[in-house]
Image (tube, rainbow, N blue to C red; front, top):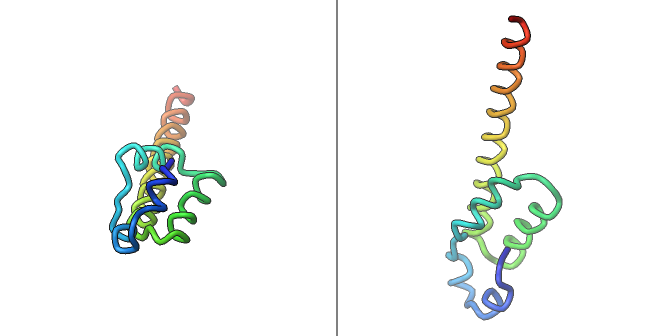
Length: 84
């Protein structure tokens, strides 16, 4: 998800304030489960990308919330339609 050569050349202060790209936010929101996603988030924390780490965790939480809401709506609709 990230360009390793770019990350290695950044200074420490730039690394802390570097934001996620829009595509990264979208991918963390859509694929908010799994080992690969969590290992990518942990690598941001380990490598000193504080802002990326926080934004990735936020995108994962938003993705999980959206999935939970959609599943709940689907189950409620399935129950209501089955009764008719």
